[in-house]
Image 1 (tube, rainbow, N blue to C red):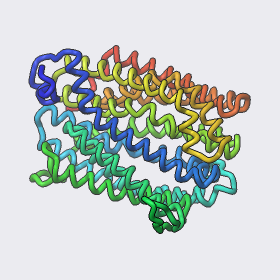
Image 2 (spheres, rainbow, N blue to C red):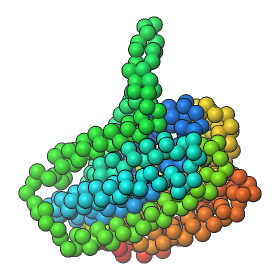
Image 3 (spheres, rainbow, N blue to C red):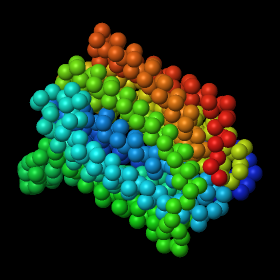
Image 4 (cartoon, rainbow, N blue to C red):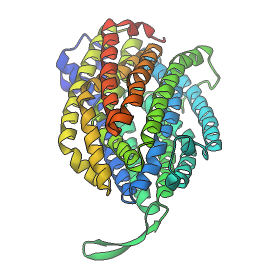
Length: 470
């Protein structure tokens, strides 16, 4: 098959394609997402470096609250997935109008949930850093940062739905560009909000760069404004500019019992999964917090640095969700099985490569992320302990993308729950007092390997293909 013709629509309507054609298609769909991840991570590095230039205390004030923001985002992500997974399967079956009605119901759902969750989080924002064990010196900044974050939650859900639905139509490029736009905008706003007005030299000319000098609060405001702008832009491209579905067409805004039931079937396990997973991250942060500000900063920076390693996994996982949803919707279980395995193998290979690269360049990365020598050295040490797990971590990420496209979210959620709490958190409780921060990252590496293995076993058994929603 000619490479130019190797697209998802042609594959669904044609005969079985060869392995190299599958790899080309997976890469063509995942490459925009991978490049977006690369941009996102680069901007995260710049973001972390901007805050890190203020000192370990500023890094820790955001790091202590980051696990909670992951928890909130994880709890909400199932809401969007419950609708865009159905959209992928309906589009694969050629039922685009039905997919548009699913989008309408999804829009009502994410806005309702986003406003409610944002309001609840705002009401408890003054207590969260205290519960997490934040030191007195970072308490005020952590609280302010979290309060500003709460305002972005409805927009975050809108972006998740819009990007997920675009990816379900096979459009990976637009969401990827918008993800990159979020990061670039965030860095630009950081420059204006974190630092005070200052002089800078450009091409021999001295320029006055305006700034609000808000520090950590400015970082929170920049992130929230970026989220608001990009989420509305993403919704516009989905609702007006997408080639397969559009809200300009006539359709129903009424709730459909089967659509809601299917959404709950996907969303509830995913949200519980992310709740328990991110709850484990919160527990991990709580365990690490007792080691002091430098350890908290090093832990936060190591997590940021590692994000470069799993960039290919999440890109391929997003492509696998779209491919699995559409092949199952089209009734092509042969393609579902073969594409799923190729996707997982490719994700494991690429994450092994990025893990090796990070092992070599970790000292340079940390020296760039923070001015604290102690945090940089400790971060490098603990990250290198975990990098051996990257290939199997990639397996779990890509398998999760495959299962999500099939609508199989309950059993993987249970597997994640057991893995995260029993294999990571419980051992960490005993290892951290003896080994310090290294104990937590050793437990993390063991858990990621265990999770990858059990996800591969489920992939090969194939029972997840029976979870089709339509």
